[in-house]
Amino acid sequence: MPNFPLPKKGKRRAASQNQSVKKVKKRIPYVRHGIRTVKSRNERMKWRAGLSDFMNKGQKHVIDVLKKHGHLPEWAGANCPLCTKGTLGKLQKWSDKQGGWGHRCNHSGCHRHVLPRAFHPIFVAGTGQSHAPLRDQASALFSAVAGASQVCTGRLVQNNHKMVEGICGRLYAARERYVAAKEKSIQFGQGEAWKDIEADEVDLAKKVSEDGGSSPVDWEQWGGILERGAPDALVLFRLRPVKTKKRAPGPGAIRKRDGMPAAKKWLKGRRVILHADGAKSYRVKLDGVKHDYVVHCRKRVNVNGKRIWARPKYAKPRFHNIAEDGAPTQKLWVMAGTQVIDRCWHGLRKHLGSVKVVNTKLLRQKIRSFQWEYWNRGADYWQRTGDMLIDLWHKDFGK
Image 1 (tube, rainbow, N blue to C red):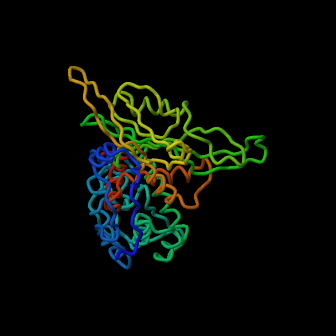
Image 2 (cartoon, helix red, strand yellow):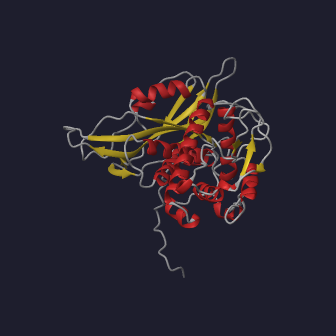
Image 3 (cartoon, one colour):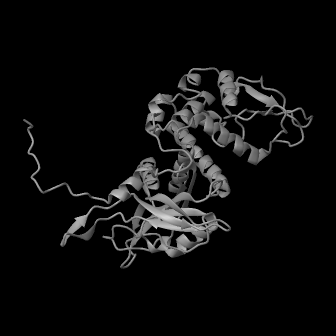
């Protein structure tokens, strides 16, 4: 005999949804195009380099490895950055100071040596107490790219903590500069028409002013636009929220004065389906934009004459009638929701850690640093850092 009670006659289990809606929901993928969301297995990923390539290695070996991975430029044959007249020769050892390897200028009025890390956005060539071997700087950079904290990096490298802080700070500054340039070239809705776009806002920090009057709280609020299946199409922009009282849970949803310029810049005429929450600022009418929204809160509904609390629905099927020029009207089914960008906000808060000061340079650099990591998620961060440095090198000194 079974050890559970049998259902009584005349009663059956109530269906939470319509059966036709369930069938439609099963055959609609949440990510309809691009790269499907898969479980990350970072513990199985192997990078192109490791700490063993830098620690306790000679200067020439470290320079060759960094050049091979794109973290150091090739100065041989380039124009001398000191006199701008001569040409630099091949790498050679010329002194025992600072490792003793450099490129010599062939101009008669110069003849100076340029270190391989000269004018580098991350590495520095100091003297005296501020001097740090290139292998220690490379080890600190690798640890920072791998996600180690500054305290952990300092214990691994065994060097001055100011060197580690400088490497991390210059890495964040380089990522911010790279992201600011690449973000301008992002375009949504490329290729296949009517792609799914998610938009949302996030509160990252707050500051209470003693002389702020009745609304003394300043908020750090950012907005984001993301295309499903394209993590390299994440766009972040800072908002201007209103001040609130001390007990306010947040500044509220994105305002129209911030949402309308962003929508016109990134979404107008792109033939996309915008998925967001129920804020009125997202319900703007633009050419080539169709809007879906879900409400992330429970609500009171009538069931068999009774008022009960219904759970929020974070994803539900929707359809749109697409009328193209010269083509018959077709019905397009999509899944409404903001689950992808909500996971993005979770990663952003984790990346910021204890950096939660309103309107500071460090907070902005950390946000852009996370944006760079999100663009390259699932890839070799060390190799992508080399590609980023090559791109910055081309912007500064040309190809």
